[in-house]
Image 1 (spheres, rainbow, N blue to C red):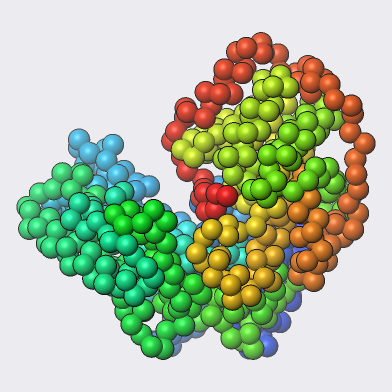
Image 2 (image 1 turned 30 degrees about the vertical axis):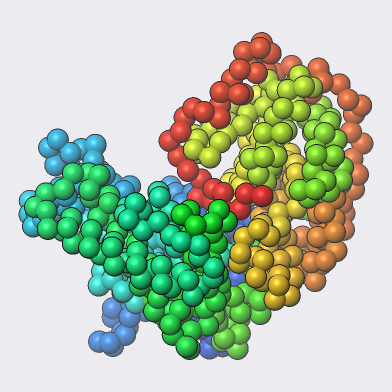
Length: 580
């Protein structure tokens, strides 16, 4: 890597905000000998442009010795972030590659077939005469030979050990705050009827901990391997058999990884097991602090790393979770350029939203939400419901107030489709969302206000969370929640001249701000210090509907109910990580 090129590789015609200073600080951090630079840059910093500048400083073929890696990777956990990169003219030299299921076969009669189910995957020894024009293999070849290859973090991890995507000089990870948690999720093994094709032959006994899981994993792997060999012996497979074969291959790899890691006395990974419904039911094997997994899938893939996010709250905690040596890691802080008065926080707390107290708090929160709607009669708003249970209860309560004609909801299957429709709509609709605190850009009139219904603490019923709390890792617990809150607050204010209000409905959020104060970025602490109680209008359901909706109440009520069962053609990249 040549850090001196970082500034000259900046792709825009001019700097804005603090970009010039940020690049100078990043350059200095690499020149000081750090292998990893964490860049804490708030919303609107232009992180993608910073990422492009860093990637552009990677060693080139003309600068490298024969055994030295060249080029760069750009990766992000968020599919939507990769889509933004693809549509940005300033980033056109980032060559994007996606998974096979995102491409269609071009053979006659197969144009509606995803590449992962095409004849090349169905028929043994199939010789595709047009492979050189296949959209997937073409994009893969181009990305493999361009200076900067861009992909999702999932694809990046899956290609570890690939001859096509080997080690490069520089790896840039955008939205990297949850890297350890994403790695844990990718490394989790789901043994259930839906995910184990041979489930009928391997229904589990009562699994009490990782020792029992070890023996069960051996059995599943043995029977899965037998079925895999049967499928491989067929000259031709139908699409369902292709999917089964591929899932068996993936499953065997997952189980091998677990068994090797669990039996390695030097491994730092702790494994936990969930089987909440007992013998004969699904088993989930989960890693905690998967340092070894990250080493193989991330840290061995490059020589220099830049990790960017608005919410890397603690350098030491991040390094501990990701298996990094803090002495080789630098933190670069980028100041916020959005005026604090444009991003106000308002205290409208109505009580706690814990499971025990939710039934008492939600009716008061629903009334407060109606009054917020009155205060914004002609503006679209976003409600962060945190869970589908809260969302469904709010829908019922808002219906009782007669304001449901202004409400739009989604379910697990249609979230992207309903979100897209809502974003395109005019008027004043209020979107009741679940798990959309990240990767959502609501600049300008797309949304002028939002309500946070619940402090987003990790689900304590998850075995990994429970284990961490049992080990006394309360700092991690509060940082995880604060990180999500900060991410959520950035959804409705996306530019220096943008503005949007964030209302806090759960009193546990105020407690969180006190407990996690030392981990707050200064710019967010300034927001918290300016937090005030708004003067909301007296309750008037008619005023909450507003004049711009222009629809009959009966028709709109029917539409808002139906919206949770239609348009099921997408899945948000963060869907349902926690649902408590």
